[in-house]
Image (cartoon, rainbow, N blue to C red; front, side, top):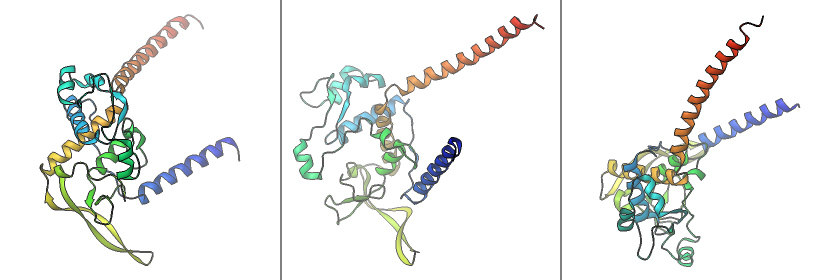
Length: 254
């Protein structure tokens, strides 16, 4: 088998495995808003992250003063986003004690600085994964935390936003597969107890949080894309100029 045949075989195998993962790898991911250039959304997402996530999860590669890139002033960061004793130049570290975290959850909660980038896969972007995860929690008395998740079965993290969303129950349908009766999620939910915000408001808040986590994984991504557009325009213009110069140079050569 020559090199080209090996490459084509490898590409076909990768596509087949990706298709199998997307079709049989569990619950499909919902599409996240993906608005990393929306400053209002990013600011609200930063507030949600500090209030609900930073208690257990660190973002140890992000400094508080970097939030000035999303339109916050140093005074706003100090007044609204800092815990007692922290400084604007400090890293965003979790308030929980690592020993207590391991005792409560069985392991230390992971750092979330690049979580959106690390979770990208065949099902979609990392933002899609997180967006679906926070909208797929349900009560389960058989787990240590009392919560479970359709995207991450037997998840060790209890629902951090349950007061906002309320308690929901997934609706399953029973189907026969390979001679056995299995439960299949229908895509519908039943509201058990109401949350403090409406479903639409909750989805917006989760979208803001996902936008912030996506931005935090690469704060310079919007600037990089903008520079890339100008570079492509320059190359197109330069190509046209080079083509005309070449034609003018060779016009008298026959």
